Length: 106
Length: 372
Image (cartoon, rainbow over all chains, first blue to last red; front, side):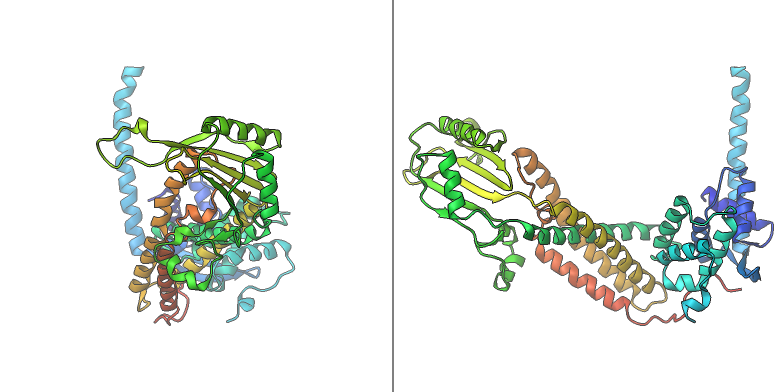
């Protein structure tokens, strides 16, 4: 799973979000490193929807502008859990090796 | 529902410009999600912005073109679309360059050829001057429908840039090297740009025993002046009546060919991408003949690409092997019309695939992102 996809799913894990809300959340989650452009976001949403990982929650019109909220599907939750576990394992492995490296380089 | 109903005209210039960029997305996508995307773009835009940034524009164009391919789960569809777009661009660029060649002057006539020959080879009479009937000929004639079978079935390589030719049979009164040097000097004195002299074996080893050092070689000179190119070929005498001197006068590539090729290529590539995208969207599940459409696309690419990949390296070697005042036309680099049968069969497969893709699908409405 690519990082933007992981971040979009993570943003939706907190509850339904609409387009701009996802963009803001992704920027916050990544500490400003990932700045999604709307075109990129909607291509990713198309793909995630086709894969059955996200779905539309509801629609609202605010100030004459359409907001469509997206939420994770059960499959999306499972995919995010699997990716999180994979990343946790990788992080743990890296931390273990770094701990053994530090005394030698100190 | 009409697109105007879902994408209202607005006085906001930024929204209008975003909507214009959204034309890169397919119509069904715009109907379904255009307003949502515009709303997100407007919300993400910093205050005071009146035009989309270059990054935003490139992003929307790129993702819009991706959306035109449909199949959002597929990553390989982009590769297939690129293959189709590039080959279509190459073919349309070839067609455009062929049309641009019509801006060239006709091949040198008798008088022009005689004047050039008198200039560079005074005292060397030729046995005759042959003036071709057109810029590009096959068997010495302009291409016509009656030649179609020859063009398709094996003799396509006969279609080539023509030249006004003159030759002389018999034996040279001076050694070939001396004659070549004299012609080269006169060409330079007459304002021709002369390329280096090259030598080529008259034949290759048919098998052992063979001593390559004793194979006779010809001597070739290439020159250019204005829009005229010249190739002089001097051959060692083999028989009393064999040709020892051959001169070809042709035209350089007209200036219009390069821009025509670029414009034609770009238009063809965009058209190839759009047509592929249309067929790809149409032939998604649950289209009844999607597998057949996919197979026909595969057949088309299998017929169109191999001649290009086979011939292009040979053309590179050929161009490196001897000077070329003008490069061979683009279509020859693509193996055309030598492999025109492959091209025609590929066109038939592509048209059949497009016709099948146009058949009604079981799905009538554009696919929504997901059911609520």
